[in-house]
Image (cartoon, rainbow, N blue to C red; front, top):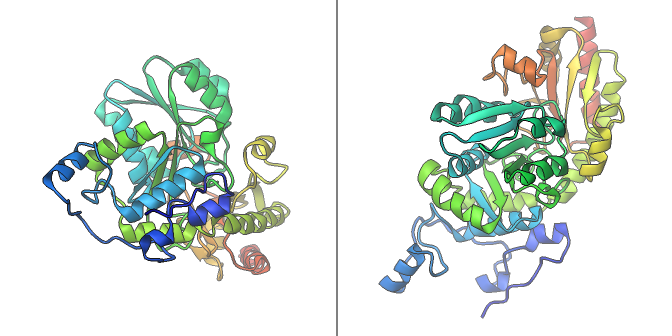
Length: 402
């Protein structure tokens, strides 16, 4: 007898903790068991055949599905407002599995001008080599999508906020145009998470995440999440994931991600509040040319941020006066803040996109993306905000002396 409770009408934090799992169905274990198994036994040949054919529920091989991973997939689908989820070994695993499932030679993929460096490399130096036309468009202006979308376009893809410049895209406006032309929309929601923005509820068809970041939240895993319709997720599971990429999430990683999302809502609230305080402080500092953070009234898309986001997140970017050398000196003077790529951890992290995450782009491509040599990206963690500000202040003071 199943004791499974219904949580779909309950709050975000409740679903982040309980969705998809009932302890009484697992001998009372409060935390979901980690099913460290590659394969599953069948009661009969007939049962095995029915599972392989998709005619009966149940697991048969962990490259296709696993009980622990399945709980995470259901939980993320609920939090994003989608029908089904799919867990992968990394954020790039989620993106590649989606693209190999949806696109074929001759198809067109429209992307925003600003993308994470590895996403850009996969699209423009990977998919393009297999006969897929990848077209960059400034999707912050929906009219530009209307002008170029065609009968060959299969998918529109963008990040909001975008990495690393924090540029926003109006999800509802882009989705309306795309759907009018019979085109699907995929949104990378890594920066915002479903605690702040839920793209599917605003018209998107797919949401992708690097679960390595805020979802995991503790810098101890690499993982990806994809959410969409049941039919689309089944297609991606059985083609892009199972056959094309093999980018399968391990059950133990799923356990870690579920541990992380239990506290997602309160972590995002704390990191957003601290980030806004840091952004306002940086904006007033004479050694800072410009701060890119959606919660600042000076941010060019502040009104869109207020309409589309219920908070402003923990990540920002800023330009220093003094160019590349100033950025290097500033970062090297920090003592509390860690010089490291990634974001969304409990620790505050800082990195230099031009020489790190976006170094795979040519100088011309970086210029097109707004990634200057003096741009620095900061992911505000869970430390006491006064300590973060003190570290930034001392590093900037040392830069003045230099």
